[in-house]
Image (tube, rainbow, N blue to C red; front, side, top):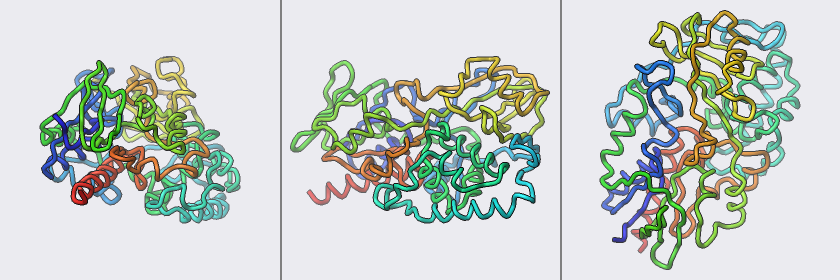
Length: 430
């Protein structure tokens, strides 16, 4: 059988592509390499509180910034609720900082304003629809630490920006790209606070509720089907699945993470500019770590100079304690080292007792090979928009190639819309 479209990858981008192409009358096969759908949105039983479900991947929504995701939730009547509110603060940002939501001391206000004004001016140079490689932004594609130091921020403000930069980039600030951090600011209405405050709602019954609702409208899904190669011919493409099975379609959608593309052999090969980035892979090694503790107040939020740049409340644990969320990266921290976890938590909360740790290392997972997208310095000022552009009968979707909201669930849905439009327009033209 020859399908109209084969979709590779069962995350939100793949599900939306498969569902919408099916609804348009296409014959579609969705191939998922793992044992579950949802991609880097992953809700499962807690390793420390087995009666609870936890999100170990992407989970947040902001209705203003994420209209496609909000529409999907409303379509299937999936409930949301406010994200846990931060009410108690423990900041480690240096002398003069305050344990409050806005820890910058008054005496730093003028210098902080001047530095952040320049940051916002640089962010305003970015058109989030155009691609970072088309706008002459190479001067901003430098290590984030170098850029932040050039702003000449006073010490508390500098540490606050460094901490949130590390949190958002998923790699050390010596390696992360300042251009990518500025892209985040641009995407959130050219607002620094917009990035932080985008963690607004969570899905009450978890991301799985939306995944299952979308999957119910995709009639042909095959699990544990790892794609090894895609061969394009004059009128169709062959998709070779591990084990040797050959499947044929008029179009193929690659909706897997960017770092996994190097495990797929493309024939003909991808153009050299794209192939170089695919072979190197982006640099995010982010870790989202769930730490169960006793003795922490509800609503705790910590930001500072620890190996956990941020640590905040997530939900109550079954033992009456709390489950906290920490962010760092796997090159800087080993979440299996219990003593290291305790030291990292005690940096902010010396009075708590660590009960257990739960984490999924996306970088070592062969179906992902990285957490959310975060380029290395020099990558996306050279090749960015082209990564998501179609190549013959092969199309590319997923949050990693989103221009407006890369790394977010909204970005995955954004790229799915683009690919569906490409394929349906192609059908009309032929």
